Image (cartoon, rainbow, N blue to C red; front, side, top):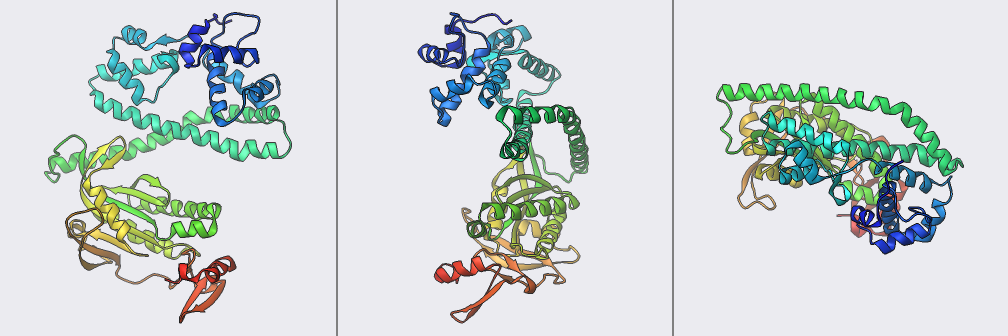
Length: 454
């Protein structure tokens, strides 16, 4: 049995006032009404109660649920209690034991996303810090290690989140809908997770190894480029020359408004799959996705253009699908924590914003490196001043030399592009013919034609 802790220690570890903790004990949520001291398990239980109160539950409801062994809350109170029942140490104590500067220890914990109440650490945190000490002693600069820790922390949190979310949405909620009690549904879920959990680490290692192979290949090309004198000398560590590409759906906002979030998410899933498929074939890497917009990086500018025009053709042939628009630029960028920054990133983003439906806009810097590509036609659009940029710049459109786009019309309400057989309704308004993907879009147009006719 774990050693008891005082109410002063519990207050320090949770940040909760002693008076509030006493009230929670009176309701049977934490502690034992017959004992003066608390247990380390009460740390996690108090933290959970704190969050539940902020979510809108009352202390009375929490106390009632805590007294029911079959409730979901009772299950999680016990789980949270066990999580914080392990031996704990102060940050200064561990820093001294491992021989790491105290401020540096805090920077390592912060970069790794480690935040514990009262700055108390457990044995897992000690192992993590010991590994950091090994990396530092091996000669890795602190800034480099901090970048690695931030990327690992952020992405492992996403991995854990997706497992928890899909388990809740696709397993727990259906079980509850079938009439299972909270305790029974959790029992089924925990049994499933016990069978799945041994597969998680091998899957992570598999994708990590695949990522290492890709990263080593790109690193080899970078080394060879530098040795051949083809790369500019970087001004600071992490500066490299890349092709930056932004691509999004030209009418996603009106589509989501007209069709609703569920239908819009289905469209976005299709688009995401197509972007990933085409990017892999062009040796591009997706840096991030924000809504319907993707940012991709290419070591070789020709591959960026090929990816863009291929994606345009791919999407234009997809039945009932919005048009895409793309912007690409070439220049030095700064690599930091798995992302890329700098004015050249902004240029690529602004080119995408300026592009029309089905259009790939590229900068003059990129055009000078790809202008002799076979099968690609480049149209000079002249100088433009892009939003947020002071100077005008040469802009070109890149497209297939041989037209391959299927002729379609755009629904004026949702922006969906329709082939002849996909038109659900037509309407002539103010001397112009309009096609609609559904009767719903037709009704919205009729109700407010001035909002859509333009």
